Image 1 (cartoon, rainbow, N blue to C red):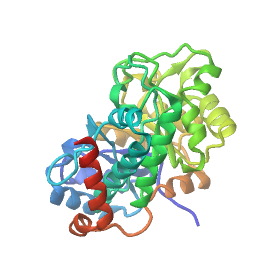
Image 2: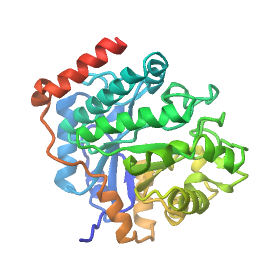
Image 3: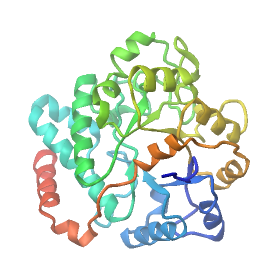
Image 4: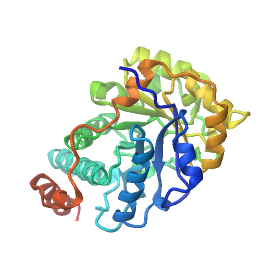
Amino acid sequence: MKFRTGPVMFDVVGKTLDRDDKRRLAHPMTGGVILFARHYENRAQLVALTGAIREIRPDLLIAVDHEGGRVQRFRTDGFTVLPSMGKLGALWDRDVLLATKVATAVGYILAAELRACDIDMSFTPVLDLDYGHSQVIGDRAFHRDPRVVALLAKSLNHGLALAGMSNCGKHFPGHGFAHADSHVAVPVDERPLDEILGNDAAPYDWLGLSLGAVLPAHVVYPQVDAKPAGFSRVWLQDILRGKLGFDGAIFTDDMSMEAARQGGTLTEGATAALEAGCDMVVICNQPHEAEKVLDALRFTPSDESRRRLQRMRPRGKALTWDKLMAEPRYVRAQALLRSSLG
């Protein structure tokens, strides 16, 4: 079976689709849509928006950054306000078994609520290590210890899977050590490869088959390659796919970020990322610029790349919101979350 979705994910202009949105969504190079808080007013509006996207292209992946903590796009009208992953790490330090149970509950609640609104995936979990000095990671990370990160992420991924959702580990091979914020600068991590593989990248190895997708960091590791990881065949092909044996999908981080600029056009950057081994390029907050990429991009994804993206689609039928609220597993997960973290 051949899948014909394209390799570009971008956002729409507002809370409803306009004529330009519809034209871009129908473009053969379009493969997905990413939603933000500005696309959300309430659940009814969100469901109407995802439904309108499906009417145009039922094959598109609809995604969101919905980690918990300060990175959670939908927080009202019934959506559970999820804890930061750092709170789960702190709970681990007090009670290991409880922390793993709560992580699974958080994953289940996160995925079940999104799926009830017809959203396919969240870019989660964060697998970065908390070194205590990253401007952009901070309490988005589970813990400083890569073993704790891997085990809590595996528990969270289990919860996602119970609701039929895959997962996306980020930011490979690790953004936690670099000081700068890749949204506004180019972070540089000067450590040698062995140190990075033994610490920051270890969760990607240990999670193994339970890892559905990976999102590489817009960080330069000059002792490994002069290019940021998301544009580097060394990181994506030789290390991630070769050494670590990863066979899932690879999504770029936002191509609009300062650290993604490769001295050329957005189309040239997207081409470079795809040629390095990414399966989907993500362009945020610039739908009109994304359209230029759609029209100018000359890249034909392999059938294997399309199959990797197809595997990110949810499994099983999602519950409606009303049915979810009464589902015993969801009710138990909510009770566990409240009693453990308040």
